[in-house]
Amino acid sequence: MSTKPVVLFVCIHNAGRSQMAAGYLTAMSGGEIEVRSGGSEPGDQINPVAIQAMAEEGIDISQGVPQLMTTEQVRDSDVVITMGCGDVCPIFPGKRYEDWELVDPAGKGIDEVRPIRDDIKRRVEALLAELRSA
Image (cartoon, rainbow, N blue to C red; front, side, top):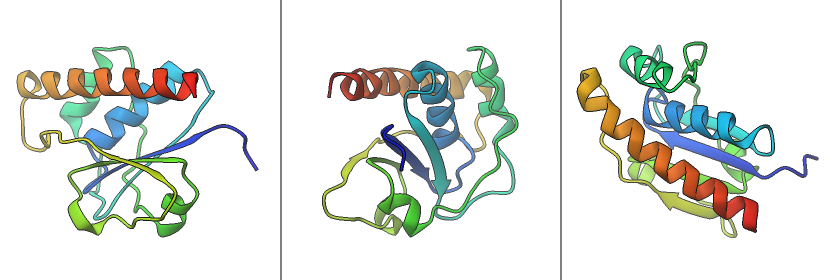
């Protein structure tokens, strides 16, 4: 069993917000944290504008594949961050849950996605600082 904290990012399509958050946490944590992401209704590819926005930050999420979030993933995670999946995300007692209200980048251009990306970065930095001080 891993002693690293496990963080799961969940959004509906697992194609934008959760992939960007997972990309940031993976890059910033240097392997200290096991990072997972999933969606309640996974899309068929990562949002190309999200890929472009993250590439501007030097983070490559182009190899990501939208995954179906499973009940087991939620159960096995220490922290579950949801991003607009509403009531479809399973809840387990004793887990830390946060819901980040973020605009869905689907269908938006790069100028509209950058502020979403930057908001995600700030939230991931704060989460990482909390996990490191726990």
